[in-house]
Image 1 (tube, rainbow, N blue to C red):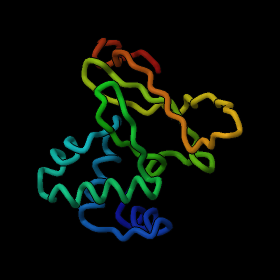
Image 2: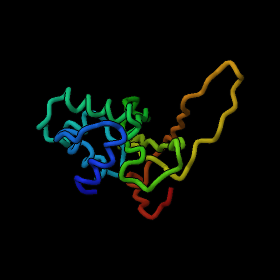
Image 3: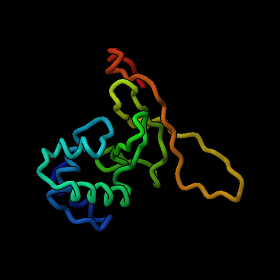
Image 4: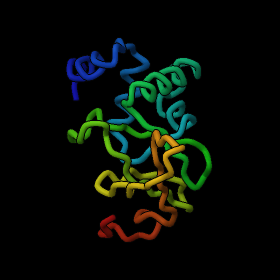
Length: 147
C-alpha cells in the first residue's frame, strides 16, 4: 500500500497522515500478528514519543482501523480491522482470535466468525470477543498446519 492509498484510506475517518500514523500503519501492514503497545514502540525504534504512538493507536481504534484484543498474556494487542486487508462485509463482523501461551502472539482468524449470541432484551450488545488459547504453529513447529 503506497502513501496515496493510505491517505485515501484515512480520509473517510477524518484523520490526516502524520509521520507517526504512517509508520504505525506500515508496521501493522507488515506484521501477521497483533502487536502490543510496547512492541509498537520498539518497532518504531523509539523515534516517536510514547504519547504520539498511544494517541495514534487510540485514533485508529476509535476510527475502526484497528481493534483491541486481550489475549492469554492479559495485555492488549492491536490488529488491523480492514485497512490493507481484503474488503470485508459492512460493519466488519467479529472474528475469532488465537493467543499462543508460549510466545504470547495473537493472531486474527478472519475467516472464523464469532457465533451469534442471543441475550435477554434488557442487554444491548456492542461487540463480542472470543479468544482461542493454545500453542501456535510456529511454537509447535507444525508450519503446514492450517488454522
